[in-house]
Amino acid sequence: MRTNDHRTDRAKREADKLFKQVDTTKTKRPSDYEIAQQSFQDNRERLKAERLAREAKSTGRRK
Image 1 (cartoon, helix red, strand yellow):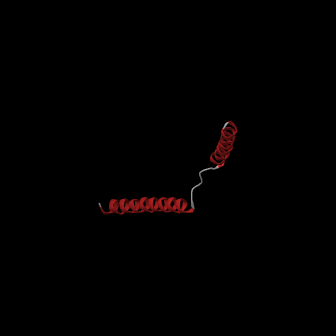
Image 2 (cartoon, helix red, strand yellow; image 1 turned 135 degrees about the horizontal axis):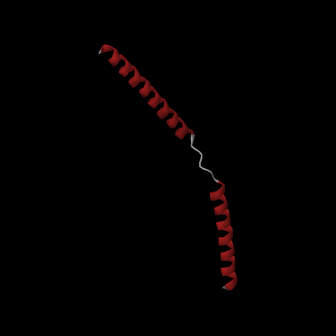
Image 3 (cartoon, rainbow, N blue to C red; image 1 turned 90 degrees about the horizontal axis):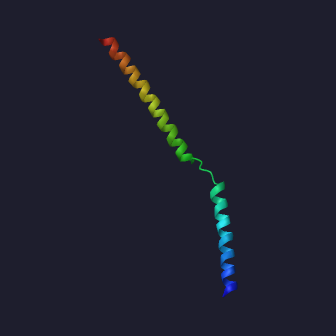
């Protein structure tokens, strides 16, 4: 029994070591979808700001 426990403990330590390596080396990078969505949102906000500026400018002339 004792040798079996020792093997299990060793296997568990090895597995933990491998999982820790994967977790620490993996960096969070945005996916292509996330990049595209962020670009879309940024562009939409820019266009909205430009539209509001044009509307404010044209409304100011009418008065």
